[in-house]
Length: 263
Image 1 (cartoon, rainbow, N blue to C red):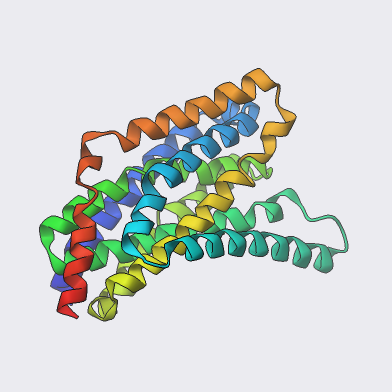
Image 2 (cartoon, rainbow, N blue to C red):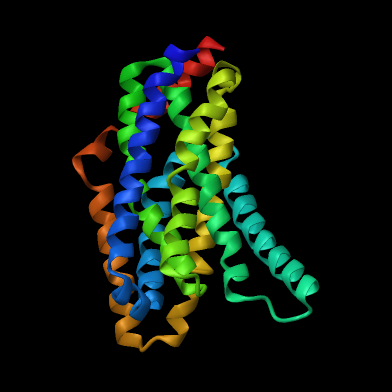
C-alpha cells in the first residue's frame, strides 16, 4: 500500500506546490489584487474556458463514451449547486445572499475537479510509472491557474486576501494529494470508464465556473479593459496547452486502458 501511494502522492504534492506558487504570486500583490479583482476574475475566466475546451474536455471525451451527457450534467449540477447555496443563504438569513456565499459553489467545483485529478494520478501510477509521470506532468499544467482562479473568485466575493489565500489553497492545492490518498486503497477497482465519467463531470463543473461566476464581472467593466483581460487569460492558457509537456498528455489515456485490462 505504502509503495503504491508514494509516487502518485509525491506528484500530487508537486501539483499542490505548483498551485501554491500561483497563489503566492497573486496574494503578495495585495493592493494590485484588490484594485483589479474583477479584471483578474475575467482573465481567469478566459484562462479556464480555454483550458476546458482545449485540454480538459477533449481528454474527457477520450476517456468516457458518455462524456457529452456527463459534461452537460456537471455544468447543470454546478448551476444547481450555485442556486441551491444562494437559496439556502437567503432562507437562513432572510436577506440577499452575501458575496462570499455566491462564490462558494464555483470554488467548491474547483475543489471537486482538483480532487478528481488526485484520483487520476493514483490510477495511472498503478498501471505504469511512465504513464503516471506523463499524466501528472500534463495535469500539472492546469494546476497553476487553478489557484489563481479560486483566489480571484474569492476576492471578487469580497473575501480578504488572507482568507482568500487560505480557502483557495484548500480548494485547489490540498485536494489533489487528498484525492490520491482517498483513492489509493481502491485504485484497482476503478475502471477507465468510471474515471473518465468522473473527469467528464468535473469538466462540466469547470465549464460552469468559467462561463458563469468568472465572467459575471465582464458586464460591469469597460469594453476595452474587459476584452484585454479576457484575451490575456486566453493567451496564457494557450501557452500552457502548447508547452512541450502537453505533448505527452495522451500517455495517461493509455494508462487507463491498461487499468481496464488489469481489472
